[in-house]
Image (cartoon, rainbow, N blue to C red; front, side, top):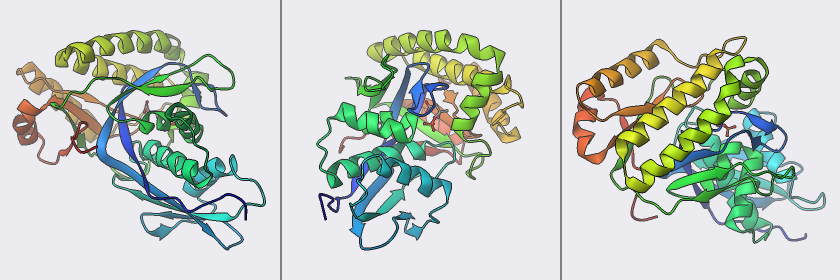
Length: 319
Ligand code: PMV
């Protein structure tokens, strides 16, 4: 049958946004209302492999377990596959392995769609540039366009209605001392996914009006913080950006509040430690977990304060 080959195993890192993507100007193409900036998570992410199968339907496997074809997970992955496949081409088995909990607000959909885009590129022999791979990944999940790259990554929102200029670019900076710690409050699947959450915010939250300008200003400040390795500026802007996004969510109707009592308790502990002089900040996505931002020289102090913290190292040598 024409063209489709087995792919090797393709890896894409998860990413944590320092300036968040929140709101779509085109929901079908995942075109954002604001540009965003993330840092990738080194070795944590998704590994994906495609194999043509002699079967009537595609198969989706997650961490070694077959997924129901009607599950939300399978449906979303297969939709991206269907964009590329001609009807006469063989069915495929998609094998995907996450080294992070699925759908815990940890951007597993980002690494998942970026790894799938890379595997599709090989199987269908598309020979896409990184920018085009980023566009393809974006069609699966907006934040996935940033998982095509390592390190600091900006998603340029673009202007075209076809979305071809809406993709990520890597920033030429490293920051080996930068640490992210995952504080898991609840790793179960979130109640309202980011797609519906964004739509609800856009349609009902009066506070959303001020979000695009805030995000643009935060991105500028973060650009400076990264260029000058100014951790206090980076942390402050990232935390303020995340809380501003959550403010727009809370101002939605019905209200969208991802926090749990333990989330709030952790925030207060961060603020208390900061007041005592520890340079420690947090960011949060569409879920109850906190991602703590700190530098390597303060790691012991942070770990002593949060014994359950899972350290994620954005910049690792071997990549
Ligand atoms: O890519 P999506 O549709 O799962 O949206 C991600 C949205 C946030 O995680 C809340 C922010 C971001 O920029 O990652």
